[in-house]
Length: 145
Image (cartoon, rainbow, N blue to C red; front, side):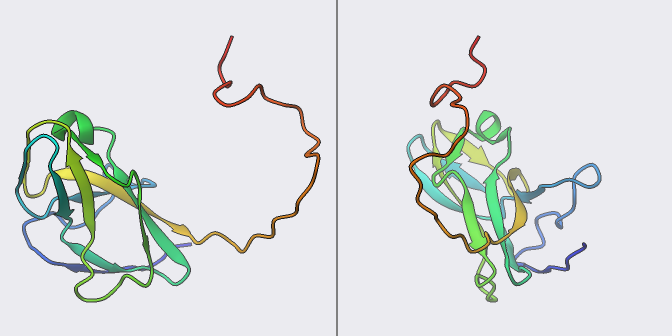
């Protein structure tokens, strides 16, 4: 089912949001300003947008696969979660990063991506002594010969 999302741009220096190469599960986000970072420095990089997400949805913001290779930064919280209540006129999205080397990020550079997901349904936790399934071999066991 198609959802409509209202979006506010804080700058005309970044490309408008669009699926890259047709339809995708993720949409790229761009730096809204030039950023110069020294190794070890922290920065909230403005993404130049605010959105009104549909009720019951949240956005998951993560680095692109090339973000570290191209810019030498990692997202400090590893994944940002933006819920539908963060939708005010000044609720600009940011990517919190720490530089692992001296780096420059330019306006309009694609530095992260997002997708929207429905909120988790309400869960009931039922305690049990036995789950009744075969063990897989412990943490990190997948793919062992």
